[in-house]
Length: 150
Image 1 (cartoon, rainbow, N blue to C red):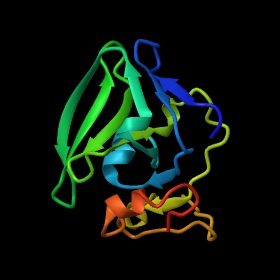
Image 2 (image 1 turned 90 degrees about the vertical axis):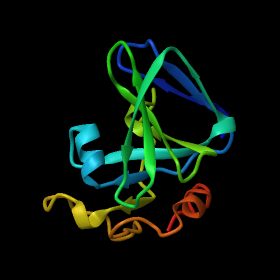
Image 3 (image 1 turned 180 degrees about the vertical axis):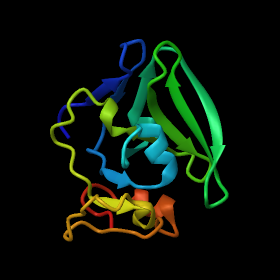
Image 4 (image 1 turned 30 degrees about the vertical axis):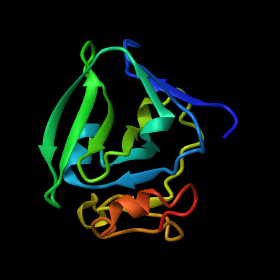
């Protein structure tokens, strides 16, 4: 990636910058992502902490996951937009909410997670890997790199 990716919350009080390799994109169909996005699924980009810089005041809350880990969910204290998450299972990465990017035109999921919970009207591209839940070693899977998620 030549240019850094930038994004932020809806009101602009929180801004971030992603440097390094262009992160992979995945769509998650779990109930938590459906609630968080107020839609059928959420799209995320796993980013190494050292490639992620955030400015502005964020708040957070923490929730459990179906796999027994904890996820800290960061949001703008002004407008409430969710910006990124950090899992207790992989503290070397954050998961940026893809819709918060300034430029979303290039986003294409490289994998789908939790398709066992997807909405029945969502039709998936058969050429994109789909997981009934999530890969058993999520940290290794996220570390595969752009285009390598399976």
